[in-house]
Amino acid sequence: MPVGILVLIVAANGIRLGLRQANLDESAVISFYAERYLQDHARLEAAGTAALTDCAAVPGSDPGVWVVVRCSPEGGDSSWDYYIRRDGSLAFTGRDRAARPEA
Image (cartoon, rainbow, N blue to C red; front, side):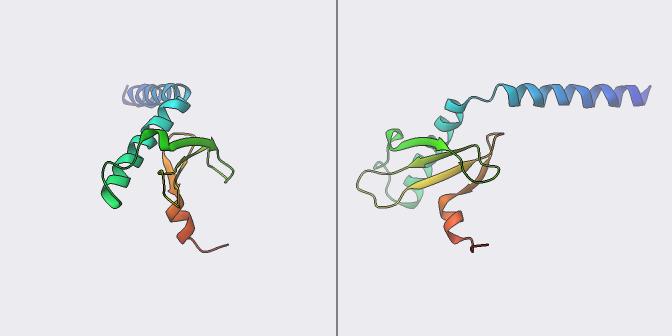
């Protein structure tokens, strides 16, 4: 009996995670990281100078990167890049990438 319960729990979690992955929406991911950009920009630069319209998304070209949310503040010379995995999690930021040594 305990093995059957364990199998049911594992199966239920598999179905739940599969549905979550299948329902992941590109626009929801872009909106989430655009909001994060507003928070990061306010914390690290100047509050109130960033806008959601500063952000756009492009397909990822790095291995394991689904989409890149690139936010460029008006009048700014650098962009804030968020490299997103297919599951919606953050792989790394553009600033992290710039700090990595070339392999």
